[in-house]
Image 1 (cartoon, rainbow, N blue to C red):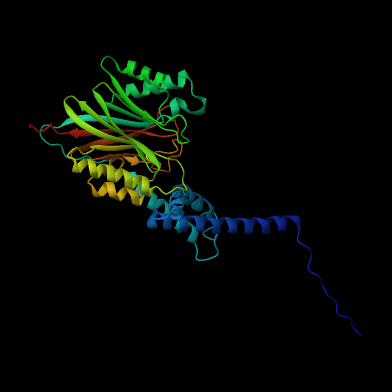
Image 2: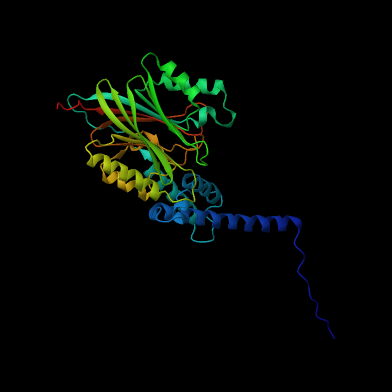
Length: 347
């Protein structure tokens, strides 16, 4: 009788176990990247009618798309089993969408007879230099602000009043400053400032649902300007729609009163694709960042994937140029917009 022999499968070697683990870790990571890209694109299309979809808008598509390409291309398109290069195609789509929506045109609007150029700078200065702020960090920031020679300086998260007095001195004789800040007992901190070598007048302090604001009247070389400077609460889980709707309502009321705001600007803590900005756009405001050449993200400064600081320009003014810059000791990029302001009509 011939006995049948049975050969057992040999156990996997340690090298085989590593290859098996690497394969499934790569596959799981690729599926996760694809899911994040799909969710991010859905958030960009749906936008933020509810807080859950708003969170999807914060998925950093440029970074996730680049990682997807780096993962799939060395695998010859097989990071996901099929179809081939599926993950790379999704990564390319994420990068293309981000490029189309986040790269400014660098254009300029036509001037009209009698226009005068006025420059406005906005920057979140992070309380004068962030958690490690010091007289030196604030000195560096002041020097940078003054060197850019704007007609109006608008600051979010400004440092204390005694430090702001130093900026007024740096601007020279006749400089002025207006500001509003939270009450000492408030859990929401803000400090909004407008400084200029030209006359300024603070006209009102707004307390919006989800933020705050300040109305300012300025006069630059005889050209009047009205500003609504705002600050939004930095809480991604909180809907931005009530805050932005209140801002649009304030602009609408100002227009009906015959004294419209020429500029609405500040740290909105909200991407420009938010549904809430449709109200401002419907009133004729244009986003100055779309005139900036190149990438127009403002936060965080070292990898600016989010556009959350904005300058909205009313239809009375023309946009000549917009430039973004990296100021010292801040996690936000600043903006310097040059506007063409018409002569004041004779009464």
